Image (cartoon, rainbow, N blue to C red; front, side, top):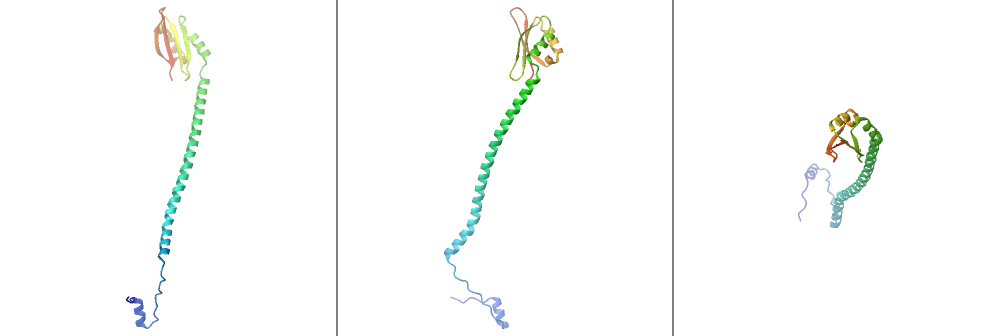
Length: 170
């Protein structure tokens, strides 16, 4: 084995007569210790990544539970709001008795009411039998309640009268 070469610092110190400085020799390192130290250093980031994954999975589970809970509450509030709007519309609409009274005042004398129905969505359906539908249509357009109605059909009866079917627009 060859002797280690002297450094530039050692050469200068020897020429100038200064005290030489010797490099301390390093102790022999056990290979198992070096491997364990390397593994420990590499394990830090791996454990950090794994811990972050676990935390993210927990946060996603919590967020999904909150989302489901919020959706249930949103659906319930939507149903409640829809029911409140339907109730408000039902209260604001004239009752069937008021509607019948207005029909009786508006239609010509020869016209007869065949049917009146209010459907679940609030649509009003009226069937009126008359000998001439034109004066009936003119009379119904004068009242604001019936002016918004549109004629959806008509048919002839056995006695020669015409049944006009009208419905409110939704």
